[in-house]
Image (cartoon, rainbow, N blue to C red):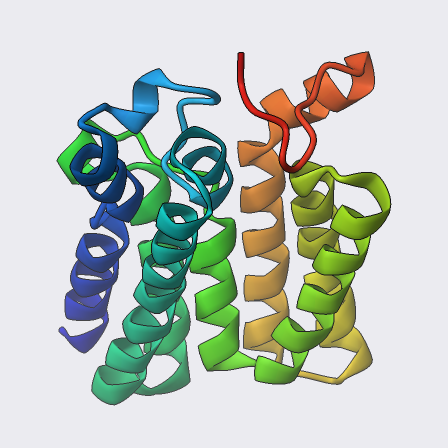
Length: 196
């Protein structure tokens, strides 16, 4: 019962559409009809500016952290992992936005902060470094995702966390398929570049 409750809570938490709510309040527009159509930090930043983008980033990180803590409280590490994954699913396919959403990067980062903070710190350094060098947030997110299961193995994290890291990485990469196509064709937007 605790696992089922964790999944339910995690999904509902993840479904809270901070990107949609903040931009709608800030500009009176639907973020899904602007830029990439995603509700995450990058599209909010490009569409509405840095401050609303940062508010959304904190909110999305918080969803992942709280989801894991709820899961751990009710059922230990396994429930924490499942609840965290459910929050990522909720963020990407929100029940409040007709199952649309973001890419799951910030919410996933919140999940890993609660489960394996040292992994997240190293991944964040990789993410920031790639953005500084290339200006591509999507590439940074993809490479950061790939680094998660590798770092799990290097630091000898539990099998449960390592498998979850692999699943989460695949999940984030799958959600970035459109970005990968644009990176290959040279049409991907760079950080700070506004959508036309």
